[in-house]
Length: 210
Image (tube, rainbow, N blue to C red; front, side, top):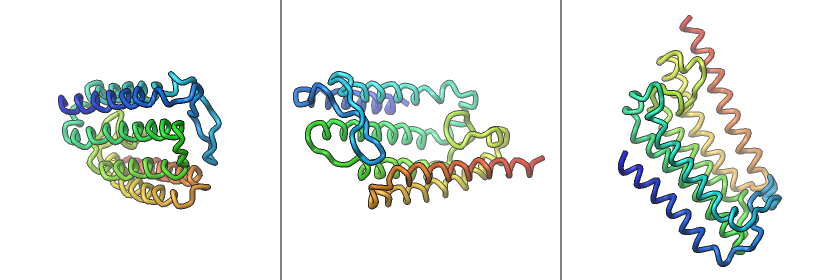
């Protein structure tokens, strides 16, 4: 826990430090949002463009750090605490990855988000798939439906399937970087399909317990 706290603080400080480093070279209106085609369709004032994402990284890091202590099933976190800490870092590093690309884009290195986002999202999905079968029942992490939360058996079986679904989704999303024009559609469709299948499966498995 102490080491994870230090790791979160380090990532947050790094995010703010990178923003401070880029401050002199940033335009007064920074590109901050890109549409499905990879074109800029939103801007922020310089200060917001530089420090909004670091602030979000800090908030997300703090929230995820305290989640185990407020979960009614907090005891279950002990069995997968290592994997949960890894998830925290994967999420924060993904946000840091986005932050760096925003800064580089505004510095003149305009690499399409449609080519890089599949890498970040795909890696997150792969990690989620990896830890899914190790996650015990809780209210914050995993496939949380009324049926998985009501039964350890349904939770376990759903997450075994979810592990395979998320690993497959991660691979598909990574490959979508090869077709940047369809990246957003592929990411959304792949994640949505995996989630729907997992939800329906949890319901069907719960019915078997009645």
